Amino acid sequence: MNRLVFVVAACLLAGCEGAKQDMYDQPRYKTYAPSPLFDDGASVRPPVAGTEPRARGAFADSSGGRQGVDLVRRDAEAEAARTNPYPVDMTLLKRGQDRYMIYCMPCHSPAGDGDGLVVRRGFPAPPTYHQDRLRNVPDRHIYDVIKNGYGVMVPYGDRVEPADRWAIVAFIRALQLSQHAEVAALPPDVRAHLGDQP
Image (cartoon, rainbow, N blue to C red; front, side, top):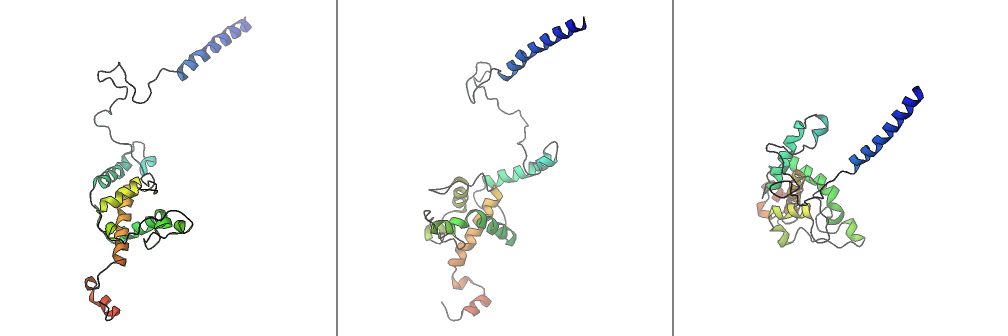
């Protein structure tokens, strides 16, 4: 009798595999496919009112993701800015220099003249930052080129977060100033070391 119960139970459980497979092969919509199920005719549903973006950074340390919400908000503000939203101080310039040396220097060189090591090995040379055209572009142009790429330059938007893009912009502006500063604009003690140069 026990064997009969065991055999019947085994047969019934084997039938569950078919139901299990149905869960793997559920009907679904392709991304952005139309759907007659909803009034707006779209299968993609808008987020529920009050939904907050998924936090990054400290998100892994919190169960609700609340610790990273400030970082998401900061990124959104930096992304929306038309000019550098951060005060240009030594902290920002150091961060910009650090990120520049990692992401930009191989092509653009430490001085920003477009003669980096990658270029010396045959890669097309980027334009120098010290030409009038690039000295006169708005900060947002440089930010957008970092984010989206330009010409043969690949986009760095997925690698360099918005705040760091603005730090790189500030550092590039410092590089431009270092190669094109007017002597009259320098502090008197610096001008004294230059001697009689105009």
